[in-house]
Length: 461
Image 1 (tube, helix red, strand yellow):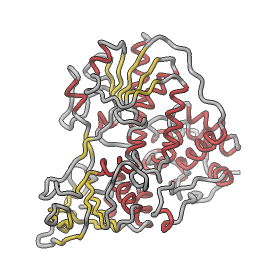
Image 2 (cartoon, one colour):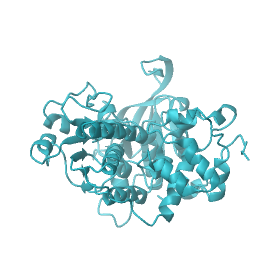
Image 3 (cartoon, rainbow, N blue to C red):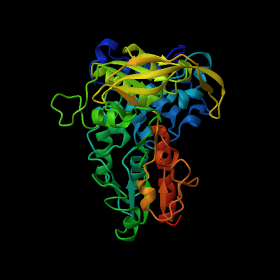
Image 4 (cartoon, helix red, strand yellow):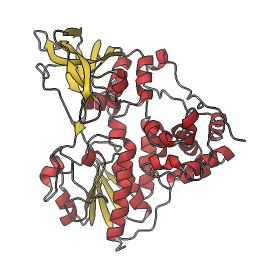
């Protein structure tokens, strides 16, 4: 019998005053009973509107129907047929603006908790599966994948299943890209990412870490000297942006990229860590996206009083609503409708204040959001000893500067066609390296698209 409740089953989680002092995962996941109950809210619509919002086209009603029957492994097999990273997507995808946005149940109440059910299914499988995926028979073709983030891992997985000999080149010492260096442990445990990487290795994918494409070896050399027939560039967007204001070079002013990489990848918050990180007392995080929320919540866990300084209002915050709510619950202070105009420092050039000005919202700009306008004579100062800039990122120029004939757009992204093909023959690209900073699931979708095109090209289809 269908469950006609108008609200989702709530997600069990750590209490705010407990979790803001540790890096353990905040959300604890559904129990079997909660998953069964939530799955029964799905109406199994014939036209499947939820699927139109999924960039990797997971067969959502079908997997939920299996959950409702209690066949969790069958549900996992349905998800994994199109999604390479279900345990990841169930945690970090913005379902509220994708699949759940189109759920019929959302018209008169809350949509079915598709993301929470996906996470439950993936976690159940990981807890009960005893075998790694089998290595497919080789088809004799070799493909190189640059970057081991969501786009690269998805492309590699889809090609490996078809028998391609795939090597993934990763600049850092650990595979996973933004999944390991950008997203905090309390949102995405790194053991989950490692399990996905291990699954690719079992299928025959080679992971080459500490290899900077464009420095250690170039794209041209991969194809001309090392025998790769195609290359997929999924190198992400790791070049941070800073405000053009006085004092941005003072000690204690850093990018969210550096701050999060030290914490997430290098575990600098641990007492025995070999990588140092400052433990600030008062922090201003400039920005309002998911990265800003991640940086603020990490700083809180280091014991700091934390402000988020954002030039628009709470309604305009681009971060996921869930992340904003978690940040508020954990004690993050939101200074909205404010913008920094200068960083101030002591005699040792250590930042000790930021000067801000208050803003008001005017007419919409090109993005469709109301333009922030400075209010004259409204300046004020915040006492801080650390400023974290979370203003977005752009693609690193290294690959474009070392690859012959690669067309780049004005924002530094690689230009591709609808199949992910670049201006170079048999060189494909996708994810943040093309679009600039975006979501995990969109990068995965780009990886799938390119893998399909590579297969069609190399197999002669």
